[in-house]
Image 1 (cartoon, helix red, strand yellow):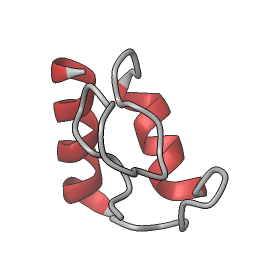
Image 2 (cartoon, helix red, strand yellow):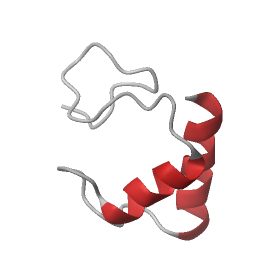
Image 3 (cartoon, rainbow, N blue to C red):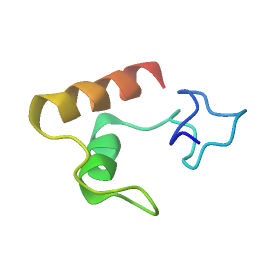
Image 4 (cartoon, rainbow, N blue to C red):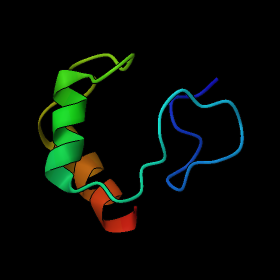
Length: 59
């Protein structure tokens, strides 16, 4: 099982929601706070910002 199948979601047996429609700040909050069953502080610094920006731009 993966956390998020792909940025659009759907298919597979993912635990997390599709990643469409989230802004960079929302993604950063999720990375740092770990909503639901997601672990907190999975990434930090520039790596967290890069992932958040990527998801916001491509989601």
